Length: 254
Image (cartoon, rainbow, N blue to C red; front, top):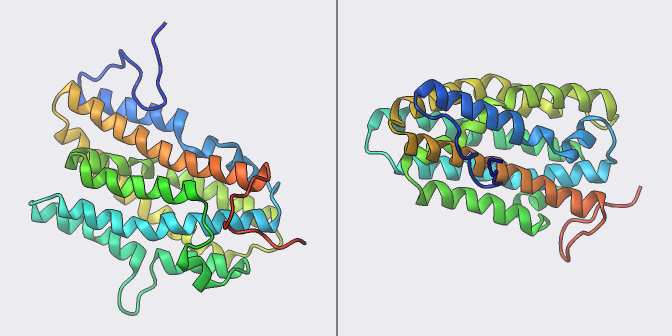
C-alpha cells in the first residue's frame, strides 16, 4: 500500500511533466479543499445559528485581512518587475485604493450585517488561537519557502469560485439574516479568483522544471489546504461542539 500523508503528496504520484503537475494539483483540490469540511456543510446548508455564523465571519476576517500582507511578502521575493506588477493587483483587490472598495471593506460589510461591531472585528481580539496560528503560519510560509512555493500556495484559488457560488446560494436560501448586499465579497471573488489562479498555475507549470520542484509545488498547495482546513476544525470544536477557549468570542444567546 502506498503511504499517504496529511502534509505531503502521495508517494509515486506522476510528476514527469507540467501536465502531470496540473493533474496532481487538481487532485489535491478535489480531495483536500475545505469545501469538504463538515463546518462548511453546516454553514451552507442552513444548519448553523446566527451566533455560529458570526463566529465564522469574525475569525475569517483575520485571514482576509492578512492576505494583502502575505501578498506583499510574495512581491518582496521577486527581482522580476513584471511578476511584481502582476501580483500587485492582489493587494489592491483586498485593500482597495483611494475611492475604491476592496475585499476587506466588503468583508466588514458582512460582519456588520451580521451584527458585529467593526472595531471589535478589526481588533482580532475575539478570534480563536488556532485561527491566528494558522494564518500567521501562512505568512511565514511565503516568507521562508522558495518564491516558487510562495506562489504555489495561492493555488487554492483554482477551487474557490465553486465554493463561493455554493456559499452565496446556500446562505441566501437558508438564513433570514443574510441578504445579497452583505454577500458582495463572494460575488466579486468569483471574478477575481480565476484570473489570479490562472496566472499562478501557468507560473508553476513553467517554472517547476524537475520532479522535485513539482513535488514542492504540490506540497505547498497541501500546506495551504491545511491552513484553511484547520481554521474550520477550530470553529467546529469551539462553536459546534461548544468548547470556546477563554477570551474568544462568545455569541449572545438568542
